[in-house]
Length: 205
Image 1: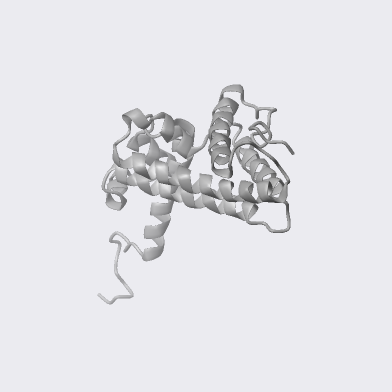
Image 2: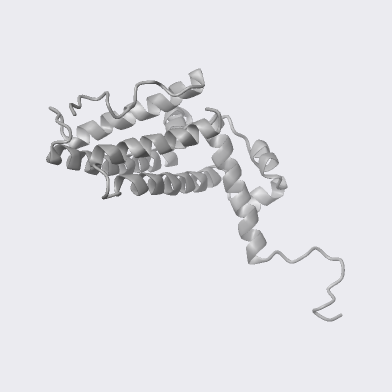
């Protein structure tokens, strides 16, 4: 039998189909974990949502913990890109950059009818029950996002666009606490809070 006529055997998995299946599983996790969190999401639900056999899950990932770390890294990359896209936009003033980020992120939340939250926020709530390996990862992600906002607020303070008796790092920490709270509240009320997270925290424009 020649290589051109291989018969009816199982088709060879190509690099393309390998990546597609793995990405389908990651997308499934991004959807379900932002809705339900890590602890409430089982492997059965993940593979069913991805339309992938359960055996394939363990072909691509050693465990649910390994899988969730991969999903968390993908979410971090996506969200960091969104932050940088807005906060590094030099044509806008710092507070307009921050407002543009908020508006963009809010549209993403509304797109899914307030059913999906922030994966990092969800897992922060679950932290007492999470494997210990997640704790430092979550801390590092939150601190990297906070640093991006702190740099933007530093520009706003330096330019006089805002004034505060707190420094930029303190303001950024308060911003993220308010942001995560607003996202959780939106899931409860199925609406975005009327108070924008950029104008509540000891800022005088």
